[in-house]
Length: 264
Ligand code: ZN
Ligand code: FE
Image (tube, rainbow, N blue to C red; front, side, top):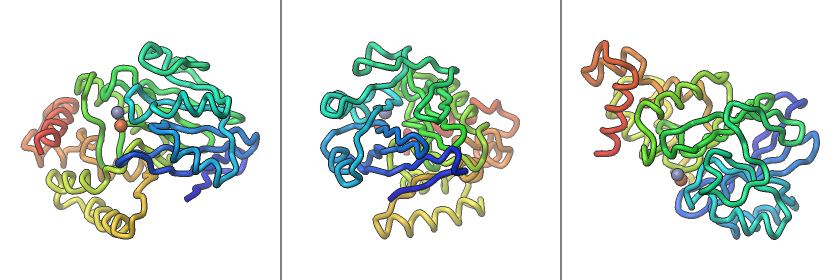
């Protein structure tokens, strides 16, 4: 399934490649230059098959964080296609050897695309997200999921909350491509927090229909997450009231929601 994004000047094609248990890798093409990338190859063979089908050769491998289900195919793809590897400089010691050691807060070029590298600690401390500004596309790794967020394996709740706030500030129409198809279980949890949120009720019906047909629920958008994702909505009075935490600090409310999900 290929999605075309944004104004033709900055078009980026994105192909979802389901891998492993419930991960998504992505094959991306900058239409103007024909530059091809693979985001988070947690294994090589499914991606090699997808590239063969599309008759594409990757120039770049883009990594969001060091977990094996996001990097295990990187070295083999780099070797067999002569692709270069991009990832967070700050986490270089835990990533395959980087050809582009990216510094969060700085822009990177992928073909004709300007890519904002966003520091998103929380799930891991060296996690980054790739924001293709012109195409309005975000690769959020295991930071922001559809109606969910990543577990706090290394960072603190405050760090994750601040990371989510940065992503929430992107244009609402931004397409979000995340690292896992966790949407159904996230939806079930979201309903326990905001059972009467009309946007959430509609969306749960929609994702249940998609999964019933075996279709991906990705991409989502920043706007849809702001309307339905309880983690990114921790600042909303409605969410605070639902948790009996009126007037509480946003990050504390987020931490409480994260705890509940961990225990669910
Ligand atoms: Zn991970
Ligand atoms: Fe993961």
